[in-house]
Image (cartoon, rainbow, N blue to C red):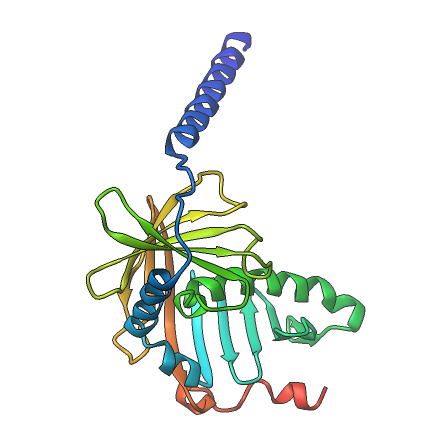
Length: 248
């Protein structure tokens, strides 16, 4: 038994050492970039490539993130329906207040706070992956032009405010010749590897272009059942899920 425990301990130590070595080797320094007209011109080209002007005019968007969290978003009033496990949340994204049902039972003010906080954390991550290109000109985003080793131009977006990101989180956008993103590299506080790469694949053919598949090494992030429209019926919904806010 002692010998067996020694082998297990040695194996675990070796695995930890390998993981640490991979993290150290994979870490990339945050590139330097230049703020100015060239960075803004590249931003304009990326916004046009995914048709952000049409995105701004959409009223409703619905999607499923990783087959775990289902969303309906009223962009006009910034209200979100978030469903996961046996929980349904109606969240006012501006005030972070809302209504919660668990197993079909509406929760009290004291009971619901835990689930509102949980739903907000899901929202911050999942809505950011939905369409971060159209957030490049949000308040608090600093845009810099970066020249890569192959002389290609890339856009470094650094977020100075919290919410969907931590202050200081940065994302380096790399595009194709039509300014459609093909990957980004992430410098985020929650990630152990600095400069971690994620692909941007399987773009929708709507007027608004949204990437529905990302690879981070062997890990996949998928957005499914993506719908949009100017009325809730365009999403296949028989009624507006946010009418409950009116009667609250």
